[in-house]
Image 1: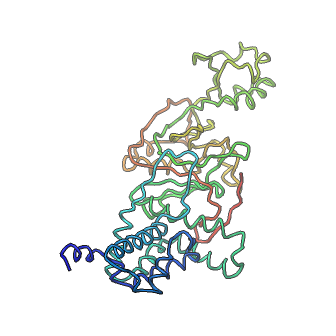
Image 2: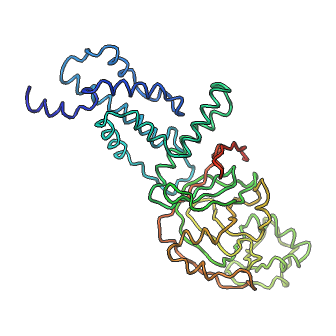
Length: 390
């Protein structure tokens, strides 16, 4: 045998260990219990090799077979690592890296230990995945494969596989729409969790990925035109005192302040409104004392709110699409840590109004995910099924 052939065969991980081929084949046939589908993988070759182990006719045939087995293994273990299907977002402003070489290295490592089954168990070991897989088994045993609960549960398992991979070594914020909740992950740990208020069905919060950019302390609220003309203008036309009670300023097209008392409000309409509204800073401000920006085409942002009572509701879908935060200061401290001076000096208990806005750049990698995950895990580790509010 030539040195070239011997060197090539030394790289054969699969053909020199038929027991591992059987293990891989068995794992693939178990795919449904792991929220995957057997048909995702071209495993007919594995079945053939197990049934007819001496069918390979020569070196080239063996090389091709080794590569095909490796491709099947890579595809299967990538799905255990990243999920299948993986989440998609209509707006993807942050591209998460899938480290496929890491999967290849794990396969080689466990092959050398002759423990490919242990690799599958390792990839299924994150706590959320274990909890959801256990729930999947219960659903299949009690309700069968046609249960309406299975599809969203399978989706959630694969989303958590993907999430477990991409959240490593980063500060990642995840807003789950139907749960009206926000979690901040530092690696595998939940560093912060809170309630949020999200968009009403007529103005839904959008699914997306993005990167958090800035924190604005004491923000002005520049009222969107649709809200200005459809909601505020009719109230002001009824009674001008509504304008002053809402702590608004009227701006012309040059962003100059206009005396609201000198405006003929009756002539204004949705079609003719040559102004804009700006709400002054203060505890009354719709954005509260903090606004957190991220790139997106929907004019969405995270913010504090003056309507704290809404967090007591079990169904928190009242906004125009933006995300209102139950504890913005704690979140701001995480985003700015270790330099939290701007957060530490905030005093919102005393007189607090008409303070100039302050912009602070978030200098760390802080991706944001907003998704519609219908099956999630609560603080006690219980599986919760949510209704699709949109």
